[in-house]
Image 1 (cartoon, rainbow, N blue to C red):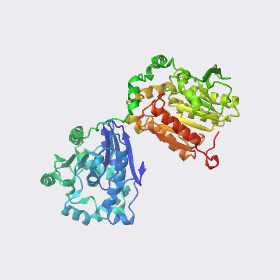
Image 2 (tube, rainbow, N blue to C red):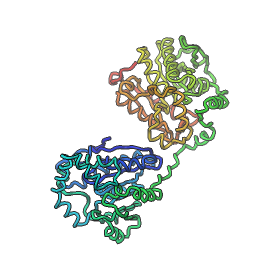
Image 3 (cartoon, rainbow, N blue to C red):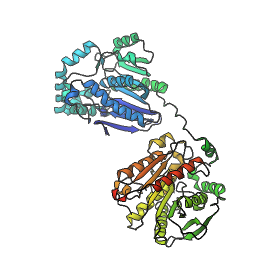
Image 4 (cartoon, rainbow, N blue to C red):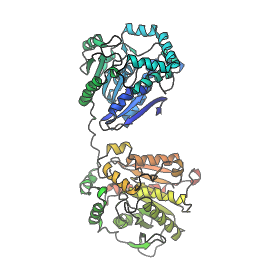
Length: 577
């Protein structure tokens, strides 16, 4: 990946937290590969190519005049990005040599983002060390050139001298030498001058050094650190280790750093999400969404919702769609002789495995009036796993085509909630792919369920709900997709996004589906589709349409505003249907 011209790799999973690691001078991110391999079973690990190294951009002339602050600024952008995407909004920062100096500076500057700091013989240099590196910069440039010209021989020699290194990092060491910005190497800057920064650190810090001749800290550096008296810092000297402590003594390095992370690196507890008072009781009253046992889930839904009524003044009837293998569409309209003013296809949710059109009778009765006296049609689409993708989407597409044929003079709208919102998007795409001409005025998508990958930040934050969980989603998608080799129902291509009518997307803040709804709105906007995105405070999955709640009244007001907002289709680049 690349951000602000800085290249980095990301691996692992964020069970315990996030690690961002920086390498030493003339190395690259690949030279930290063993670190990622060791920790990415429980941590998400970022390995960063610092400015002028690896695949990151080279220095410009102004930056070369004072390269260390330029490296810190570039690296800090990645740290902020990683923290922003972490569940706790904090990261563990690690750095070797030059990377240690960069990491220490960032930890001083943005301590609120740093959970813990690990410094491996950091290049926080004494005056004598600073002069030595500047005076020998020319020799260092020549060494990079020699390695570049004789890569094979250089690796062979390295393996003889440093036989304990992780095998994966020999080639990376040589690669770093071929990639480093030679103009930067010629400056002789390999870190920061002075160790006073260690006195300013306010985050838990472990400094690891060795005892061989080339170390930057060693026992003398530990004595200086002790004199600073910073209670946030501890240090450990690993015997028989050179400046490359981790690669020389991997087992001991991982032991001491692992103990430190167990003490200070555990992810802080996730704050409780804000839930609106009027909705708090809904969570306890909602059955567990056990999509693995979908038959039991359906029975519980039937027990809970069997007596739902559409309300006074609403006439309900079921019709069978032609060519739909007996598929029914449940129609709602006002009693009396007044002519309907619109048609709304309202698609129910249920994780693709449960639900029924009649369970939404009360809400669909309200939608009749919300849309100004509309015919509201709710398709009883086939459910997974008995009927996996694309059966349900085909049923909804068939219902849309039926409504367009039956009511050709009325504007057609689409409304979907959760899996119903996902099916709305899928049905519109199927119609377009089959060249079926159905003009849809606008689409309303509440808490859309779209992405089987479940790779968003909200899916990590709200993996345990409320209501909808990662476990429920995993089973539901498995049932719905059937053959896991099948193309996912939502592919965020520009072509697919451009097929959508003007859209209203409403998401919940405390919902694992939140971020995919936001991403859908962004995809639509970038494809030139007129789109509105709303997130109501205090809501969670399934809370948007709780009957007689203030939340549902706010959602309806939002829909009214969306429907009343003029949209000039001539300004839209979408292809439409």
